[in-house]
Image (cartoon, rainbow, N blue to C red; front, side, top):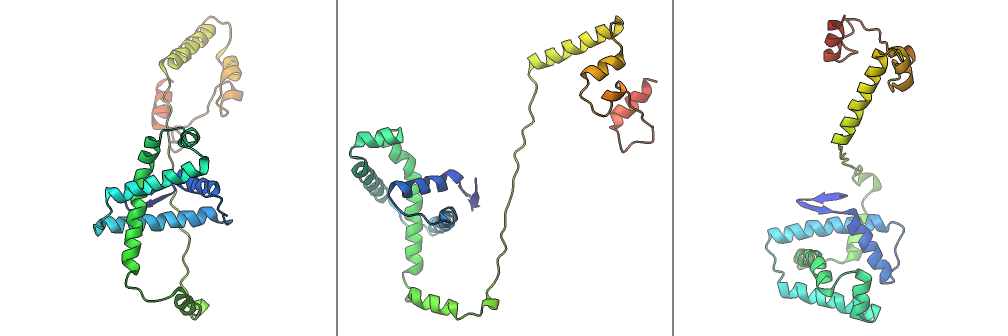
Length: 225
């Protein structure tokens, strides 16, 4: 997810697919194609949401007509329906079904855009002239804003792994109890704790070092003395 507009999302794959579609149609893409398409997608979502709020009519017949036109275009480009099916990896029905939501959204956005400009009687040149007449230091500056989210997954050990660790611990215990190896030697050999490994697993702790140690570990350690 690269953007959220209202309750609708824009996926990175949406932008990538738009770029690929443009390439297949032989269109020239500017250097900032991703940014441009991202802006267009956001504006389209805004218009579509407002169109839904205003209950602008977009019929199923209009959507189906648009889908049929798309299919005809791709068939003409690829030479046959079989070529389209092979390229897409899905049937004509599936292609239309997958594209139907996006086509409906685009039709709603177009309807909203038409409603906004239907009474406008100003030309693009007039807008450009007005904008260029504004002093540069009077134009508002908009900072870039980013919202970053992090997905954290905590892996859970499998039962097999738990049994393996338990058996290893029991094996270490038997080696120490049999005198085959000392605790210090074993700690230096297998411990992964950089704070105690070189000292044979020994820590020097003080009851007053409460900020440095986990309270449960600290209290348990002194109960063993």
